[in-house]
Length: 433
Image 1: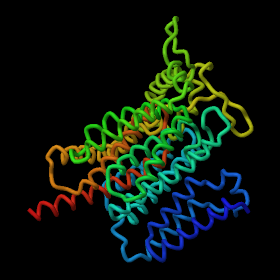
Image 2: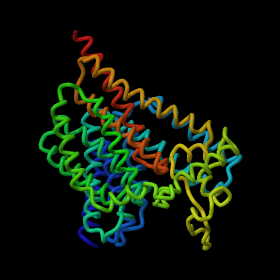
Image 3: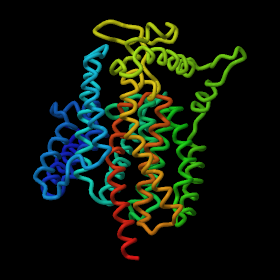
Image 4: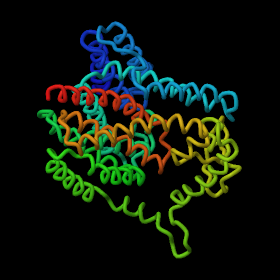
């Protein structure tokens, strides 16, 4: 057994033990360790027992929560209730889906995510807990960065955790995490800030290695939006870090990325040079036609993949292995259109309620900043980072279908917690005056 495997086992089971002996949140740290280390997909994991590491961590955490004296009310936030209704709608879709096997994959994933939302909201209670959760993610991303550093060349594929194995998936996951982590640099977290700053730079470099145009564009656009969510007390530090980030961005952007962006320009015949980029518009047009077949209810998970041969020209289809056969198919590359074809207007509306609620939390941050209300600035900054992380997720979804991304579920769980802490801080300051 390798030293890496031994270190993983020690850290993993150490966290699970502390979830019972100290605090259930340590079970979440074990879960994050399993997500980022992902032993099933690593060479060093071959010597480990065949365990479902994430499931075991979630199960132990759930048990620790039940035995904990600090457990709160389940389904305590409207976002978790909206997510439950969305899950119930997915179950109702079994009555008319095109492919129940594909749909089952997504239903089981949403069940897992729903339980995860409840677990996070039971375990994460304080500002320090939220900071710890974000820092654990940043440290986990350092491992992705290490794998990227030793990568053989080309786009960074296959080094991410579950659901983010592709270059686009990994790039978008890290872009969201970069936004969240960067806001922690504006608060007092002691000497660990230096580790976090190093992690942020490594994360940015890893995003560059993915050469994901969607991730980079979402990162830049979210950075522009972030300018409007900075309290006056940290503006100088914010813009100093922003300049440092812009310089690092320019230095790390290699010629391959520039060429990928240039390839999206039209040639002398008025055609987009990069076939991958050109296919995005073709797929969206096809998805609109598919959506019109059942606009209200949708046709189940991966509808675009199933119906693509009937709506998308063969030159834009890709080879997909299924049951020993090689088929010509094309999946969705747009979050909104993927949701519309898969789950219809009803499904999009239900998910839209969650997004709208989180967007209101972002507007609340802006309102507090403009009113110069007395509040814990650190809470305000952490919440801004989380909400802008979700904005980054939605923007990135316009370039690649990211509806199965787990990091979005973490944000759905964390933002309401921070909202509650902000409310408490505002109330305390108002009562004090």
